[in-house]
Length: 254
Length: 276
Ligand SMILES: Nc1ncnc2c1ncn2[C@@H]1O[C@H](COP(=O)(O)OP(=O)(O)O)[C@@H](O)[C@H]1O
Ligand SMILES: [Mg+2]
Image (cartoon, rainbow over the protein chains, first blue to last red):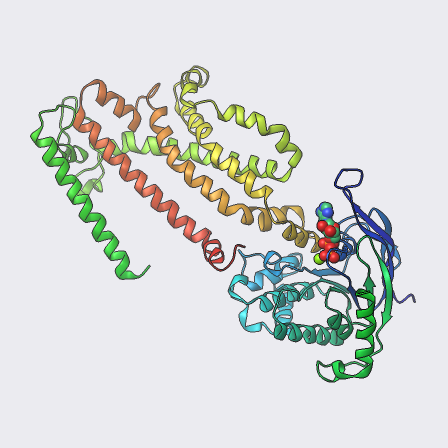
């Protein structure tokens, strides 16, 4: 059986093709994501990471190239895919409380099943107590947990995350990183996570894909061979971690 | 607002109202003007029949009538019923059309100038022709009210639906929410603050249009009574209807305020902590 969950094949993207404001965001990007793998995409800001995410999610068509899930090119949003967006405050629905926010994508399920999934997902992200609050009553880190719970509740096989922790404080950030690792260990879900934080990418990933500035290309794919489970102290103090970090830093800052 | 704050507001409002009525009484009682009867003469016209040219009163002193007079059934109810139907029609058409236009940039571009053109027609200018076309019944009055008040609802709905956050649309797309549920679960709630603010503007406007629509081709209603009172020089009744109208205006505003607080509680509180 083919173990490739998602493959990005010579994807390029030009915004506003043929107009005066034509902008070449993605040059040519190819990589593969194996089942159950955590892949982190790093690259300078503006290099087209979010664009690439939207293309992988089937939200927009690339100017060239294809994205395949389980070997077949995607037409629209693939089944069993969920996404956590960068800006949590504009991702949750402020007119709904936390629980209905999480249940919103589950309307096709029976009521009891829906409630059970939301309860489980909220418990997984440590927000079981807060399901009757409104998103705007929660801190940024908690809101991003709600967004994560909403994505997990659909029980996806592929989870895309676009700079999910970019706008939370450092403490919350490392908590959320560990939460993602925990969920990954439990569910074996395939995760593609975009970040501009090199350390975060090495800490989370099996594979770090370093992108160049726009029009972006893959500079190098770093296979991160660090043991799991990982933790913030031992993993980050290990010499191999520092080695990977060093390599990624060199790539992105040369 | 605290309880004592609320009580204090009611007290100050009642206080200033008393001063105004007393001032009104003093000014008009000392003048001989026929057009401005003192409130001591106007108010009793609200609940007591005066015979002759006087109109049936809106209220009744008798508990067996539930304190409601003939004027309530003959004029107030028909007026409010017309207004309500016109307003409901405007709301349905405004939100329906506004949502459709808000969803499609192309449709907006094609219709933008038409809307601006039609909206520029002063509604009362249409009254005569509508009576000719639709006859003397309630129809032309309701259509006139609806035509006049649909614009704030329509324009605000278009604006609200068109400005739904791009990322929230992507959320709906990624989670494969069917279009109908995107409408009810994303577009309408997201646009609701703007839609409701349009509905608030329109409600005040509907009251005005209700009166105007009854100035011609009507045989009952508050607007009809105002016209009759004026032509018969029946000024106490004229002023009694004015007082009633302002009370209705206040009541409608209060209802709208209450509904808004219930529907848009999330919006007010969320706006306090962020810009959404
Ligand atoms: N809808 C769009 N139209 C035109 N240009 C865009 C659009 N979205 C993004 N861009 C441009 O494409 C580039 C890449 O954007 P993005 O994918 O958001 O980068 P990143 O997520 O890596 O910061 C940016 O320079 C941005 O200005
Ligand atoms: Mg981005």
